[in-house]
Length: 423
Length: 147
Image (cartoon, rainbow over all chains, first blue to last red; front, side, top):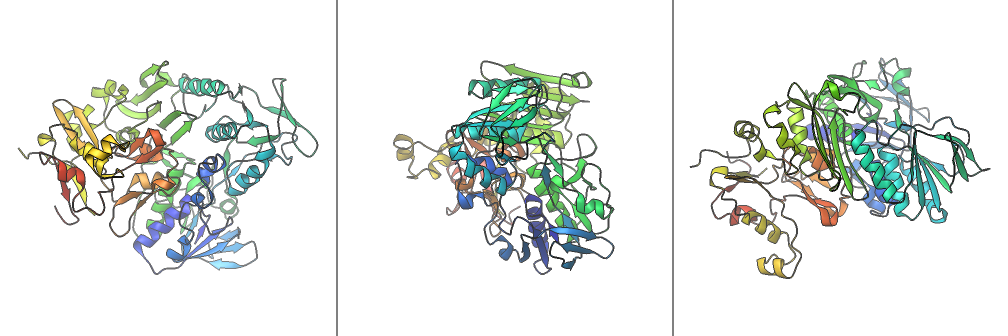
Protein backbone atom coordinates (compact mmCIF):
# COMPACT_ATOMS: atom_id res chain seq x y z
CA UNK A 1 0.00 0.00 0.00
CA UNK A 2 1.19 3.46 -0.92
CA UNK A 3 -0.18 6.64 0.63
CA UNK A 4 0.46 9.60 -1.67
CA UNK A 5 0.46 9.86 -5.44
CA UNK A 6 3.48 11.75 -6.73
CA UNK A 7 7.15 11.07 -7.57
CA UNK A 8 7.83 8.81 -4.57
CA UNK A 9 4.77 6.68 -5.23
CA UNK A 10 5.69 6.25 -8.90
CA UNK A 11 9.29 5.35 -8.01
CA UNK A 12 7.97 2.69 -5.65
CA UNK A 13 5.40 1.27 -8.06
CA UNK A 14 7.92 1.03 -10.91
CA UNK A 15 10.43 -0.76 -8.67
CA UNK A 16 7.79 -3.15 -7.30
CA UNK A 17 6.64 -4.05 -10.79
CA UNK A 18 10.21 -4.51 -12.01
CA UNK A 19 10.46 -7.34 -9.46
CA UNK A 20 6.95 -8.75 -9.34
CA UNK A 21 3.83 -8.48 -11.52
CA UNK A 22 1.45 -10.36 -9.27
CA UNK A 23 1.31 -8.87 -5.80
CA UNK A 24 -1.43 -6.33 -5.23
CA UNK A 25 -0.68 -2.63 -4.90
CA UNK A 26 -3.14 -0.11 -3.47
CA UNK A 27 -2.61 3.60 -4.02
CA UNK A 28 -4.31 6.06 -1.69
CA UNK A 29 -4.12 9.29 -3.68
CA UNK A 30 -6.12 12.18 -2.35
CA UNK A 31 -5.52 14.12 -5.56
CA UNK A 32 -6.93 11.39 -7.83
CA UNK A 33 -5.45 8.55 -9.85
CA UNK A 34 -4.00 10.57 -12.72
CA UNK A 35 -0.46 11.23 -11.60
CA UNK A 36 0.65 14.74 -12.45
CA UNK A 37 3.93 16.49 -11.76
CA UNK A 38 3.70 19.37 -9.31
CA UNK A 39 7.12 20.50 -10.48
CA UNK A 40 5.45 21.46 -13.77
CA UNK A 41 3.08 24.02 -12.27
CA UNK A 42 5.18 27.05 -13.28
CA UNK A 43 5.40 25.72 -16.86
CA UNK A 44 1.66 25.08 -16.92
CA UNK A 45 0.75 28.54 -15.65
CA UNK A 46 3.35 30.07 -17.95
CA UNK A 47 1.65 28.46 -20.93
CA UNK A 48 4.57 26.27 -21.96
CA UNK A 49 2.57 23.08 -21.48
CA UNK A 50 -1.13 22.29 -21.59
CA UNK A 51 -3.59 19.67 -20.37
CA UNK A 52 -2.23 16.15 -20.45
CA UNK A 53 1.37 17.33 -20.54
CA UNK A 54 0.94 17.99 -16.81
CA UNK A 55 0.78 14.24 -16.35
CA UNK A 56 3.96 12.64 -15.08
CA UNK A 57 2.86 9.20 -16.24
CA UNK A 58 0.25 8.12 -18.82
CA UNK A 59 -3.41 8.52 -17.76
CA UNK A 60 -3.80 4.73 -17.55
CA UNK A 61 -0.63 4.27 -15.48
CA UNK A 62 -2.45 2.57 -12.59
CA UNK A 63 -4.12 0.12 -14.94
CA UNK A 64 -0.88 -0.62 -16.80
CA UNK A 65 0.92 -1.23 -13.52
CA UNK A 66 -1.84 -3.28 -11.95
CA UNK A 67 -2.40 -0.77 -9.20
CA UNK A 68 -5.74 -0.41 -7.40
CA UNK A 69 -6.28 3.31 -6.91
CA UNK A 70 -8.37 4.88 -4.19
CA UNK A 71 -8.71 8.24 -5.91
CA UNK A 72 -9.74 11.25 -3.93
CA UNK A 73 -9.41 9.39 -0.66
CA UNK A 74 -7.32 10.35 2.30
CA UNK A 75 -5.64 8.10 4.87
CA UNK A 76 -6.58 9.33 8.33
CA UNK A 77 -5.32 6.56 10.57
CA UNK A 78 -2.47 4.07 10.71
CA UNK A 79 -1.94 1.11 13.02
CA UNK A 80 1.50 -0.41 12.36
CA UNK A 81 0.86 -3.26 14.80
CA UNK A 82 -2.34 -4.51 13.18
CA UNK A 83 -1.02 -3.27 9.81
CA UNK A 84 -4.08 -1.29 8.90
CA UNK A 85 -4.78 2.10 7.37
CA UNK A 86 -8.08 3.87 7.92
CA UNK A 87 -9.50 6.04 5.12
CA UNK A 88 -11.58 9.19 5.45
CA UNK A 89 -14.71 7.20 4.59
CA UNK A 90 -14.11 4.90 7.57
CA UNK A 91 -12.85 1.85 5.62
CA UNK A 92 -10.07 -0.06 7.27
CA UNK A 93 -7.55 -1.53 4.80
CA UNK A 94 -4.98 -4.19 5.56
CA UNK A 95 -1.44 -3.90 4.18
CA UNK A 96 1.62 -6.14 4.04
CA UNK A 97 4.11 -3.35 3.41
CA UNK A 98 3.33 0.35 3.52
CA UNK A 99 4.99 3.38 1.93
CA UNK A 100 4.24 6.82 3.32
CA UNK A 101 4.78 9.28 0.47
CA UNK A 102 2.49 11.99 1.76
CA UNK A 103 4.63 14.91 0.64
CA UNK A 104 4.71 18.35 2.18
CA UNK A 105 2.23 21.03 3.09
CA UNK A 106 2.65 24.67 2.14
CA UNK A 107 3.51 26.93 5.02
CA UNK A 108 1.23 29.94 5.34
CA UNK A 109 2.65 32.33 7.94
CA UNK A 110 0.22 33.58 10.61
CA UNK A 111 -0.17 37.03 9.10
CA UNK A 112 -3.54 38.80 9.31
CA UNK A 113 -5.31 38.61 5.96
CA UNK A 114 -3.38 35.75 4.35
CA UNK A 115 -6.65 33.79 4.37
CA UNK A 116 -8.26 36.05 1.81
CA UNK A 117 -9.74 34.66 -1.43
CA UNK A 118 -7.01 35.78 -3.82
CA UNK A 119 -4.10 34.47 -1.75
CA UNK A 120 -2.65 31.31 -3.28
CA UNK A 121 -0.04 28.69 -2.56
CA UNK A 122 1.93 27.20 -5.44
CA UNK A 123 2.40 23.45 -4.97
CA UNK A 124 -0.71 21.54 -6.03
CA UNK A 125 -2.85 21.25 -9.15
CA UNK A 126 -5.70 22.78 -7.16
CA UNK A 127 -3.46 25.79 -6.43
CA UNK A 128 -2.56 26.06 -10.10
CA UNK A 129 -6.17 25.90 -11.30
CA UNK A 130 -7.33 28.46 -8.75
CA UNK A 131 -4.53 30.80 -9.72
CA UNK A 132 -5.16 30.27 -13.44
CA UNK A 133 -8.74 31.41 -12.96
CA UNK A 134 -7.68 34.66 -11.32
CA UNK A 135 -4.85 35.50 -13.71
CA UNK A 136 -6.77 36.99 -16.65
CA UNK A 137 -8.21 39.79 -14.51
CA UNK A 138 -5.15 40.45 -12.36
CA UNK A 139 -2.64 43.17 -13.08
CA UNK A 140 -0.37 43.12 -10.05
CA UNK A 141 0.92 40.35 -7.81
CA UNK A 142 2.96 40.07 -4.65
CA UNK A 143 4.99 36.91 -4.16
CA UNK A 144 5.87 36.17 -0.56
CA UNK A 145 9.04 34.08 -0.55
CA UNK A 146 12.21 34.41 -2.60
CA UNK A 147 13.11 30.72 -2.68
CA UNK A 148 13.12 28.47 -5.74
CA UNK A 149 9.32 28.15 -5.90
CA UNK A 150 8.64 31.81 -5.10
CA UNK A 151 11.02 33.02 -7.78
CA UNK A 152 9.63 30.59 -10.36
CA UNK A 153 6.15 31.86 -9.49
CA UNK A 154 7.33 35.45 -9.82
CA UNK A 155 8.84 34.83 -13.25
CA UNK A 156 5.72 33.03 -14.42
CA UNK A 157 3.44 35.87 -13.32
CA UNK A 158 5.77 38.46 -14.85
CA UNK A 159 5.72 36.58 -18.16
CA UNK A 160 1.93 36.55 -17.99
CA UNK A 161 2.03 40.34 -18.00
CA UNK A 162 1.52 41.11 -14.32
CA UNK A 163 3.48 43.65 -12.33
CA UNK A 164 5.21 41.46 -9.75
CA UNK A 165 6.89 42.26 -6.44
CA UNK A 166 8.92 39.68 -4.51
CA UNK A 167 9.09 39.87 -0.72
CA UNK A 168 11.73 37.80 1.11
CA UNK A 169 12.32 37.79 4.84
CA UNK A 170 15.99 36.73 4.60
CA UNK A 171 18.58 39.34 3.63
CA UNK A 172 18.81 37.75 0.15
CA UNK A 173 16.87 35.46 -2.19
CA UNK A 174 17.64 31.72 -2.41
CA UNK A 175 19.60 32.00 0.85
CA UNK A 176 19.25 28.33 1.88
CA UNK A 177 20.23 27.14 -1.59
CA UNK A 178 23.12 29.21 -2.96
CA UNK A 179 25.76 31.65 -1.72
CA UNK A 180 25.78 35.46 -1.66
CA UNK A 181 27.29 35.88 -5.12
CA UNK A 182 24.73 33.67 -6.83
CA UNK A 183 21.89 35.33 -4.88
CA UNK A 184 23.08 38.76 -6.00
CA UNK A 185 23.16 37.59 -9.63
CA UNK A 186 19.56 36.41 -9.34
CA UNK A 187 18.37 39.56 -7.60
CA UNK A 188 20.05 41.71 -10.22
CA UNK A 189 18.35 39.67 -12.93
CA UNK A 190 14.87 40.04 -11.43
CA UNK A 191 15.34 43.78 -11.01
CA UNK A 192 16.56 44.07 -14.60
CA UNK A 193 13.43 42.20 -15.71
CA UNK A 194 11.32 44.74 -13.86
CA UNK A 195 10.53 42.65 -10.79
CA UNK A 196 11.34 44.54 -7.59
CA UNK A 197 12.79 42.30 -4.88
CA UNK A 198 12.32 43.42 -1.28
CA UNK A 199 14.64 41.51 1.05
CA UNK A 200 14.86 41.60 4.84
CA UNK A 201 11.15 42.25 5.13
CA UNK A 202 7.87 40.41 5.09
CA UNK A 203 4.15 41.04 4.94
CA UNK A 204 2.86 42.61 8.16
CA UNK A 205 -0.72 42.94 7.04
CA UNK A 206 -2.93 42.28 4.06
CA UNK A 207 -5.40 45.05 3.20
CA UNK A 208 -8.82 44.55 1.62
CA UNK A 209 -12.16 43.02 2.56
CA UNK A 210 -12.76 39.62 0.99
CA UNK A 211 -9.88 40.03 -1.43
CA UNK A 212 -6.33 41.21 -0.88
CA UNK A 213 -5.93 44.67 -2.41
CA UNK A 214 -2.54 45.59 -1.00
CA UNK A 215 0.07 44.36 1.43
CA UNK A 216 1.83 46.38 4.09
CA UNK A 217 5.44 45.30 4.61
CA UNK A 218 7.24 45.32 7.96
CA UNK A 219 9.58 47.88 6.36
CA UNK A 220 6.59 50.23 6.20
CA UNK A 221 6.01 50.12 2.46
CA UNK A 222 2.61 49.38 0.95
CA UNK A 223 2.37 47.42 -2.32
CA UNK A 224 -0.99 47.18 -4.05
CA UNK A 225 -1.91 43.91 -5.73
CA UNK A 226 -4.70 41.83 -7.24
CA UNK A 227 -3.34 38.57 -5.90
CA UNK A 228 -0.77 37.20 -3.47
CA UNK A 229 1.27 34.01 -3.89
CA UNK A 230 2.63 32.50 -0.68
CA UNK A 231 5.72 30.39 -1.33
CA UNK A 232 7.74 30.36 1.87
CA UNK A 233 8.29 26.61 1.90
CA UNK A 234 6.71 23.30 2.76
CA UNK A 235 6.73 21.24 5.92
CA UNK A 236 6.75 17.44 5.83
CA UNK A 237 3.30 15.92 6.31
CA UNK A 238 3.95 13.62 9.22
CA UNK A 239 0.56 13.41 11.00
CA UNK A 240 -0.13 9.77 10.11
CA UNK A 241 3.30 8.64 11.26
CA UNK A 242 3.28 10.76 14.37
CA UNK A 243 -0.12 9.51 15.51
CA UNK A 244 1.16 5.95 15.02
CA UNK A 245 4.21 6.67 17.23
CA UNK A 246 6.64 6.31 14.34
CA UNK A 247 9.88 8.22 14.92
CA UNK A 248 9.61 11.72 13.48
CA UNK A 249 12.10 14.55 13.59
CA UNK A 250 11.30 17.33 11.12
CA UNK A 251 10.27 14.59 8.69
CA UNK A 252 9.54 10.90 9.15
CA UNK A 253 12.93 9.38 9.99
CA UNK A 254 14.12 6.67 7.60
CA UNK A 255 17.30 4.64 7.30
CA UNK A 256 19.18 3.97 4.06
CA UNK A 257 16.62 1.29 3.15
CA UNK A 258 13.89 3.93 3.55
CA UNK A 259 12.49 2.02 6.54
CA UNK A 260 10.80 3.98 9.31
CA UNK A 261 10.98 2.95 12.96
CA UNK A 262 7.90 0.73 12.47
CA UNK A 263 8.32 -2.69 10.84
CA UNK A 264 7.19 -2.87 7.20
CA UNK A 265 6.51 0.86 7.06
CA UNK A 266 8.64 2.89 4.66
CA UNK A 267 8.69 6.60 3.84
CA UNK A 268 10.20 8.75 1.10
CA UNK A 269 10.03 12.17 -0.51
CA UNK A 270 9.02 15.45 1.06
CA UNK A 271 7.46 13.81 4.14
CA UNK A 272 10.64 11.93 5.04
CA UNK A 273 14.00 12.73 6.51
CA UNK A 274 16.61 10.44 5.02
CA UNK A 275 20.36 10.01 4.75
CA UNK A 276 22.44 12.73 3.09
CA UNK A 277 25.94 11.46 2.29
CA UNK A 278 27.50 14.93 2.32
CA UNK A 279 26.52 15.71 5.89
CA UNK A 280 26.69 12.01 6.83
CA UNK A 281 23.37 12.32 8.64
CA UNK A 282 19.65 12.69 8.09
CA UNK A 283 17.90 15.79 6.85
CA UNK A 284 14.77 16.56 4.82
CA UNK A 285 15.61 16.71 1.10
CA UNK A 286 12.31 17.75 -0.48
CA UNK A 287 13.49 17.40 -4.06
CA UNK A 288 11.99 15.58 -7.03
CA UNK A 289 14.91 13.21 -7.83
CA UNK A 290 15.28 12.22 -4.18
CA UNK A 291 11.57 11.49 -3.88
CA UNK A 292 11.61 9.23 -6.94
CA UNK A 293 14.78 7.36 -6.00
CA UNK A 294 13.69 7.09 -2.35
CA UNK A 295 10.45 5.51 -3.54
CA UNK A 296 12.37 3.21 -5.86
CA UNK A 297 14.71 2.03 -3.11
CA UNK A 298 11.73 1.52 -0.79
CA UNK A 299 9.97 -0.46 -3.53
CA UNK A 300 12.88 -2.84 -4.05
CA UNK A 301 13.19 -3.44 -0.31
CA UNK A 302 9.44 -4.00 -0.01
CA UNK A 303 9.71 -6.61 -2.76
CA UNK A 304 12.56 -8.35 -0.98
CA UNK A 305 15.42 -7.02 -3.12
CA UNK A 306 17.80 -5.26 -0.71
CA UNK A 307 18.81 -1.74 -1.78
CA UNK A 308 20.26 1.21 0.07
CA UNK A 309 19.97 4.88 -0.82
CA UNK A 310 23.36 6.22 0.11
CA UNK A 311 23.89 8.85 -2.57
CA UNK A 312 21.21 11.42 -1.77
CA UNK A 313 22.06 15.01 -1.09
CA UNK A 314 20.66 18.45 -1.72
CA UNK A 315 20.51 19.40 -5.41
CA UNK A 316 18.65 21.88 -7.57
CA UNK A 317 18.38 22.61 -11.26
CA UNK A 318 16.80 26.04 -11.60
CA UNK A 319 16.28 28.67 -14.20
CA UNK A 320 14.98 32.20 -13.98
CA UNK A 321 14.37 34.07 -17.24
CA UNK A 322 17.51 33.22 -19.25
CA UNK A 323 19.74 32.37 -16.29
CA UNK A 324 20.44 28.73 -15.42
CA UNK A 325 21.67 27.48 -12.05
CA UNK A 326 22.62 24.00 -10.86
CA UNK A 327 23.87 23.36 -7.36
CA UNK A 328 24.45 20.32 -5.17
CA UNK A 329 25.73 19.36 -1.76
CA UNK A 330 26.53 21.89 0.92
CA UNK A 331 25.66 25.52 0.40
CA UNK A 332 28.86 27.16 1.57
CA UNK A 333 28.31 30.85 2.30
CA UNK A 334 30.55 33.64 3.57
CA UNK A 335 29.93 32.52 7.14
CA UNK A 336 31.00 28.94 6.59
CA UNK A 337 33.67 29.41 3.90
CA UNK A 338 36.63 29.19 6.28
CA UNK A 339 35.80 25.56 7.06
CA UNK A 340 36.41 24.56 3.45
CA UNK A 341 38.80 25.07 0.62
CA UNK A 342 36.99 27.26 -1.91
CA UNK A 343 37.77 27.32 -5.62
CA UNK A 344 35.67 29.83 -7.52
CA UNK A 345 35.48 32.07 -10.54
CA UNK A 346 32.99 34.85 -11.13
CA UNK A 347 32.70 36.69 -14.42
CA UNK A 348 30.17 39.46 -13.91
CA UNK A 349 30.16 40.54 -17.53
CA UNK A 350 29.41 37.05 -18.81
CA UNK A 351 27.01 36.31 -15.92
CA UNK A 352 29.00 33.16 -15.21
CA UNK A 353 29.89 31.79 -11.80
CA UNK A 354 31.40 28.51 -10.70
CA UNK A 355 32.18 27.73 -7.09
CA UNK A 356 33.40 24.53 -5.51
CA UNK A 357 33.79 23.70 -1.83
CA UNK A 358 36.36 21.03 -0.98
CA UNK A 359 36.97 19.23 2.30
CA UNK A 360 40.05 16.99 2.52
CA UNK A 361 40.35 17.30 -1.23
CA UNK A 362 36.82 15.99 -1.82
CA UNK A 363 33.99 17.98 -3.36
CA UNK A 364 31.24 18.65 -0.82
CA UNK A 365 29.31 21.34 -2.64
CA UNK A 366 29.16 23.32 -5.85
CA UNK A 367 27.13 25.97 -7.60
CA UNK A 368 27.15 26.74 -11.31
CA UNK A 369 25.45 29.85 -12.65
CA UNK A 370 25.22 30.52 -16.36
CA UNK A 371 26.71 27.56 -18.18
CA UNK A 372 25.51 24.39 -16.47
CA UNK A 373 26.28 21.78 -19.13
CA UNK A 374 27.54 18.40 -17.86
CA UNK A 375 27.00 19.32 -14.21
CA UNK A 376 26.25 15.67 -13.44
CA UNK A 377 29.93 14.80 -13.81
CA UNK A 378 30.60 17.06 -10.81
CA UNK A 379 27.83 15.39 -8.85
CA UNK A 380 29.42 12.04 -9.66
CA UNK A 381 32.82 13.20 -8.36
CA UNK A 382 31.07 14.29 -5.19
CA UNK A 383 29.18 11.01 -4.80
CA UNK A 384 32.22 8.86 -5.38
CA UNK A 385 34.25 11.04 -2.99
CA UNK A 386 36.99 11.44 -5.57
CA UNK A 387 40.06 13.40 -4.45
CA UNK A 388 39.97 16.35 -6.85
CA UNK A 389 42.80 18.36 -5.31
CA UNK A 390 45.28 17.63 -8.12
CA UNK A 391 42.94 19.09 -10.75
CA UNK A 392 40.78 21.47 -8.72
CA UNK A 393 41.45 24.46 -10.98
CA UNK A 394 40.19 22.49 -13.97
CA UNK A 395 36.76 22.52 -12.31
CA UNK A 396 36.54 26.23 -13.09
CA UNK A 397 36.64 25.57 -16.84
CA UNK A 398 33.10 25.67 -18.18
CA UNK A 399 34.01 22.81 -20.52
CA UNK A 400 35.13 20.59 -17.64
CA UNK A 401 34.71 16.92 -18.44
CA UNK A 402 36.43 13.56 -18.24
CA UNK A 403 39.22 14.83 -20.49
CA UNK A 404 40.10 17.40 -17.81
CA UNK A 405 40.87 14.71 -15.23
CA UNK A 406 44.16 12.91 -14.62
CA UNK A 407 44.49 9.98 -16.98
CA UNK A 408 44.34 7.23 -14.39
CA UNK A 409 41.22 8.57 -12.70
CA UNK A 410 39.53 9.18 -16.04
CA UNK A 411 39.92 5.60 -17.24
CA UNK A 412 39.01 4.27 -13.82
CA UNK A 413 35.72 6.18 -13.91
CA UNK A 414 35.06 5.15 -17.51
CA UNK A 415 36.28 1.56 -17.27
CA UNK A 416 32.93 0.22 -18.49
CA UNK A 417 32.52 2.81 -21.19
CA UNK A 418 35.73 2.94 -23.17
CA UNK A 419 37.97 0.30 -24.61
CA UNK A 420 41.69 0.82 -24.19
CA UNK A 421 44.63 -1.16 -25.52
CA UNK A 422 43.31 -1.51 -29.05
CA UNK A 423 46.56 -0.26 -30.59
CA UNK B 1 20.36 -3.39 -23.92
CA UNK B 2 22.94 -2.11 -26.41
CA UNK B 3 25.41 0.65 -25.89
CA UNK B 4 28.19 2.46 -27.68
CA UNK B 5 31.75 2.28 -26.37
CA UNK B 6 34.60 4.60 -27.33
CA UNK B 7 38.16 3.69 -28.24
CA UNK B 8 40.13 6.80 -27.27
CA UNK B 9 43.43 5.58 -28.71
CA UNK B 10 42.08 5.52 -32.25
CA UNK B 11 39.85 8.59 -32.06
CA UNK B 12 41.32 11.28 -34.30
CA UNK B 13 39.01 14.05 -33.11
CA UNK B 14 37.43 14.63 -36.51
CA UNK B 15 33.94 15.23 -35.01
CA UNK B 16 32.33 13.35 -37.89
CA UNK B 17 30.28 11.43 -35.32
CA UNK B 18 28.71 14.73 -34.35
CA UNK B 19 28.09 15.71 -37.96
CA UNK B 20 26.39 12.40 -38.73
CA UNK B 21 24.45 12.42 -35.47
CA UNK B 22 23.01 15.77 -36.51
CA UNK B 23 22.21 14.37 -39.95
CA UNK B 24 20.53 11.30 -38.45
CA UNK B 25 18.27 13.56 -36.41
CA UNK B 26 17.62 16.16 -39.11
CA UNK B 27 14.41 16.36 -41.10
CA UNK B 28 15.93 15.30 -44.42
CA UNK B 29 18.53 12.85 -43.05
CA UNK B 30 20.72 14.07 -45.90
CA UNK B 31 24.07 15.60 -45.06
CA UNK B 32 23.95 18.35 -47.69
CA UNK B 33 20.31 19.26 -47.19
CA UNK B 34 20.66 19.18 -43.40
CA UNK B 35 23.58 21.58 -43.36
CA UNK B 36 22.63 23.80 -46.31
CA UNK B 37 18.87 24.12 -46.06
CA UNK B 38 17.96 23.11 -42.52
CA UNK B 39 19.08 24.27 -39.16
CA UNK B 40 20.88 21.06 -38.22
CA UNK B 41 19.92 19.84 -34.76
CA UNK B 42 22.60 19.77 -32.06
CA UNK B 43 24.60 16.52 -32.05
CA UNK B 44 23.71 14.14 -29.23
CA UNK B 45 27.23 12.85 -28.82
CA UNK B 46 29.92 14.75 -26.93
CA UNK B 47 33.53 14.78 -28.08
CA UNK B 48 35.85 15.11 -25.12
CA UNK B 49 39.03 16.86 -26.11
CA UNK B 50 42.32 17.64 -24.46
CA UNK B 51 44.77 17.31 -27.32
CA UNK B 52 46.28 14.94 -28.17
CA UNK B 53 43.53 13.07 -26.29
CA UNK B 54 40.10 12.92 -27.91
CA UNK B 55 37.23 10.52 -27.53
CA UNK B 56 33.56 10.59 -28.36
CA UNK B 57 31.07 10.03 -25.64
CA UNK B 58 27.40 9.18 -26.07
CA UNK B 59 24.72 8.16 -23.56
CA UNK B 60 25.41 4.90 -21.69
CA UNK B 61 21.71 3.92 -21.55
CA UNK B 62 22.27 3.10 -17.87
CA UNK B 63 20.51 0.21 -16.17
CA UNK B 64 19.58 2.62 -13.37
CA UNK B 65 19.28 5.90 -15.28
CA UNK B 66 19.69 8.91 -12.99
CA UNK B 67 18.42 11.21 -15.75
CA UNK B 68 15.10 9.36 -15.89
CA UNK B 69 14.78 9.42 -12.09
CA UNK B 70 15.43 13.18 -12.03
CA UNK B 71 13.10 14.09 -14.93
CA UNK B 72 10.20 16.17 -13.60
CA UNK B 73 7.99 15.89 -16.66
CA UNK B 74 8.11 12.21 -17.58
CA UNK B 75 9.87 13.10 -20.87
CA UNK B 76 12.75 10.73 -20.14
CA UNK B 77 11.96 7.05 -19.82
CA UNK B 78 13.58 3.68 -20.08
CA UNK B 79 11.90 1.67 -22.79
CA UNK B 80 10.88 -1.59 -21.12
CA UNK B 81 11.36 -3.61 -24.30
CA UNK B 82 14.65 -2.30 -25.69
CA UNK B 83 16.17 -0.99 -22.46
CA UNK B 84 17.05 2.21 -24.32
CA UNK B 85 16.83 5.46 -22.38
CA UNK B 86 14.62 7.61 -24.58
CA UNK B 87 13.37 11.18 -24.54
CA UNK B 88 9.97 12.46 -25.64
CA UNK B 89 10.95 15.99 -26.61
CA UNK B 90 7.33 17.12 -26.72
CA UNK B 91 7.18 16.67 -22.95
CA UNK B 92 10.52 18.31 -22.14
CA UNK B 93 10.24 21.66 -20.34
CA UNK B 94 13.96 22.37 -20.24
CA UNK B 95 14.44 22.26 -16.47
CA UNK B 96 17.82 20.53 -16.94
CA UNK B 97 17.37 18.26 -13.91
CA UNK B 98 18.73 15.49 -16.14
CA UNK B 99 21.82 17.57 -16.87
CA UNK B 100 22.34 17.80 -13.12
CA UNK B 101 21.87 14.05 -12.69
CA UNK B 102 23.70 12.39 -15.60
CA UNK B 103 27.07 11.15 -14.30
CA UNK B 104 28.53 11.15 -17.81
CA UNK B 105 27.46 14.58 -18.97
CA UNK B 106 25.78 12.82 -21.86
CA UNK B 107 22.55 14.85 -21.94
CA UNK B 108 22.99 17.66 -24.43
CA UNK B 109 21.44 21.08 -23.95
CA UNK B 110 19.64 22.47 -26.99
CA UNK B 111 19.77 26.12 -25.92
CA UNK B 112 17.87 27.38 -28.91
CA UNK B 113 14.78 25.35 -28.04
CA UNK B 114 15.38 25.37 -24.28
CA UNK B 115 15.20 21.60 -24.20
CA UNK B 116 17.60 18.72 -24.01
CA UNK B 117 18.39 16.12 -26.62
CA UNK B 118 19.96 12.74 -26.11
CA UNK B 119 21.20 9.64 -27.89
CA UNK B 120 18.43 7.28 -29.03
CA UNK B 121 20.89 4.77 -30.51
CA UNK B 122 19.37 5.70 -33.91
CA UNK B 123 16.39 3.42 -33.42
CA UNK B 124 15.33 1.98 -36.74
CA UNK B 125 18.80 1.92 -38.27
CA UNK B 126 21.03 -1.17 -38.31
CA UNK B 127 23.81 0.69 -36.54
CA UNK B 128 23.88 4.02 -34.76
CA UNK B 129 24.99 6.60 -37.32
CA UNK B 130 27.99 7.79 -35.25
CA UNK B 131 29.34 4.25 -35.14
CA UNK B 132 28.65 3.54 -38.81
CA UNK B 133 30.32 6.75 -39.99
CA UNK B 134 33.36 6.87 -37.72
CA UNK B 135 36.26 6.76 -40.20
CA UNK B 136 38.65 5.10 -37.77
CA UNK B 137 36.38 2.69 -35.92
CA UNK B 138 36.82 4.64 -32.70
CA UNK B 139 33.22 3.88 -31.74
CA UNK B 140 31.77 0.41 -31.42
CA UNK B 141 28.23 -0.72 -30.81
CA UNK B 142 27.77 -3.51 -28.30
CA UNK B 143 24.47 -5.29 -28.69
CA UNK B 144 22.74 -6.79 -25.69
CA UNK B 145 24.85 -9.87 -25.13
CA UNK B 146 28.19 -8.73 -26.55
CA UNK B 147 31.01 -8.62 -24.06
